[in-house]
Structures are given as C-alpha cells and as structure tokens.
Length: 306
Image 1: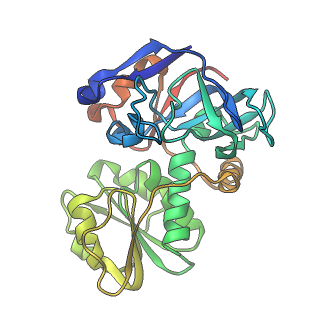
Image 2 (image 1 turned 90 degrees about the vertical axis):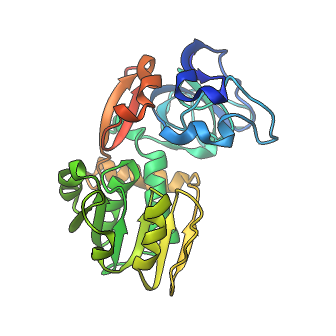
Image 3 (image 1 turned 120 degrees about the vertical axis):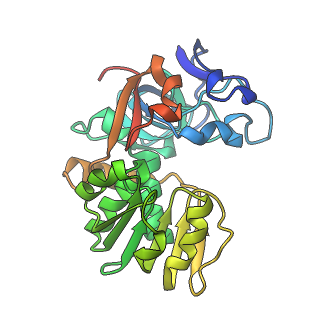
C-alpha cells in the first residue's frame, strides 16, 4: 500500500514522503480500515508517539495522521461490534502507524459507525476536533446554559466545533483569532470576536470557561480572564499561570465511541458543520503540513474516492 511516512526526526516536514509500506497487521481487537479520508495535526511530528511505540522503542518509518473515515476491510481476532464492509470513522492509535495511508490498523473501540448520508471527508474532520471540543467544554470546563465561554482560535478545527457546541448549549460565546478569520467566526455564531493581533485580550472581560488551543503568552494571560469559580481549559501545554479563584485543566483528547456517534448524528441533522479548510490528495499531504499552506478550519486528505 501507499502511505505518507517520516523517518528522520530532525528533518521535520521535509522528511515526509509518499512511500510503499506493507499492508498492516490486524492485532487482537483491531480492524483494518480502508481509508477514504484522513485528518492530521500539524504539530504531531513533535509528539513522542510519532517516533516511538508505547515501550519507547523506535518505530520509524512511521505513518502520521490520527483521524480517519473509511470502510472496514478486515477484522482482527476477537473483534466484535463492527463488520467487514461497514462505514466507520474515528481515531487511530497515538503510538502506532496512523491514517495517512491507504489502509490503517485501528483498535475497534476507537471507531464508530458512520451513517450512510455523512460524507467521509466530513467525518474525517470530526474525531480529534469534535471530541476535543466536547471534552474541553463539557467534561473539563463544565459549561452550562447561560454561562460565557471564551474560545481561542474560534475559526480553527477545534475552535469552530467548540463554538457550535457552545451555542447549542445556550452559552454566550466570545471568539478570538486573526482578523482574516473574523467573518468565519461570526458566521459560526460567536457573539463577540477579538482580533488577537490588533485588539487587547484584557478588554474581553471575564468568562466562566476559557478554552485555549494556542498556548504560550495567550494561555498565560487568559488565566486572569477566568471568572470566580470558572475554569481555564487548554490542550496546548500545562498552564504556568493559574486562575486566581478558579481552576486550570490541561488534557489530551480520549477516544469515545458513544460521543463520536452523537457528533455524527449532529452532522447528519444539520446541527453541526465542521469547517473544512482544504481537501488534498494523499500525494500532497507532506505539503499540507507546512504553515504557509494552512487555511481556517481542518485540512483533510482524500485517500480514496467514496
């Protein structure tokens, strides 16, 4: 099969290439998915799991990408709950070869059935972004109706879904980003948008939940914006500055089949629309990692036609 692989940790994006790889092995409780569409996270070349397995052993050449949508090709021993030929989507394992390939081995529990009327390209934009948005807002942020949430990167892959989920939950939404993303964020439903390049973060006021995907100075300054009893939630890095009268949570998204099913239902019903910035073929996946090529929303790699 063909796959995008990376061999040299020091080479960065330049080390990505389209190569021939062996067809993956289906371990116990695995399924082999024929990938139709895949998503990736631009920073994953810095993740330890991209280079080593769970025992710390080198596993290069490795295949990046952890979001996928496709069709079950094969079942591993003991796999239940899914069947050959079934449409599925979900998360590839962090420390195994990923989704930027024609076939991927995935733990069955990390996949959910995909309704026939949801496109693979749309489904591939949901697993990390959708689960991260839900878990950040509700599992960790405990956002409820009538509260105010500040979402950094409101037009991005995670932020755009978080805005829609927060709006449906009845929260007031403040979004931040670059000026070029203002119209996208407003169309998603933010009540107020702040340009991080030209406007003062301190002018936003307090929020019950601050959801950060940026890190660094923005994360540090956001601690002062958390209302008494509120929560600062981040996926970027453990926060160095704590809210004075609230709490701070750093988390890594976890697979959740039931929540994936719920997200797919919301998409099918028209209540949730992932923002897809670009759709590129597998041959262009290495170029898609480059910062200069990124667009608002999620970049999806189309591996096979439906």
